Image (cartoon, rainbow, N blue to C red; front, side):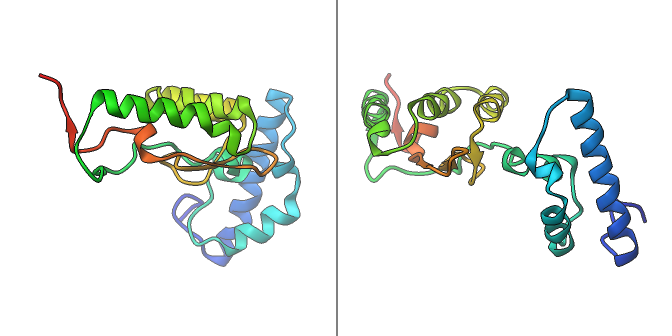
Length: 164
């Protein structure tokens, strides 16, 4: 079996170098430099420890390879109205930068939280946000600052009171 389906010793080395070659070609085409692609010692060490097949994104751009998904359904402690939810969100976004991190990252996270999934993915990728949890509840910036987002800024609770 080839690279996509096999992690056997014989195929592993070939697959790693195939992926590294693809990564380097992409870098040359884009005229970009990624320290993750050039740090082959780390990549080779990590790659041999992985059980799953390597992908182009996870090898070349591991910090942006997590695809964003909608948060799991959640329930607020008591039913709330849309107005109450919007107020909670505004209070969070107004105070979030005071807990640390960079304002431009908080702004990017807010834009991503309020966008559809494909646009949100583009926003966090272009802002250099490192997504720890695919639902955006835990993220980091390139300097290592942690950004925690509550579920209520990312989605609506299942017990939201709909105005009639």
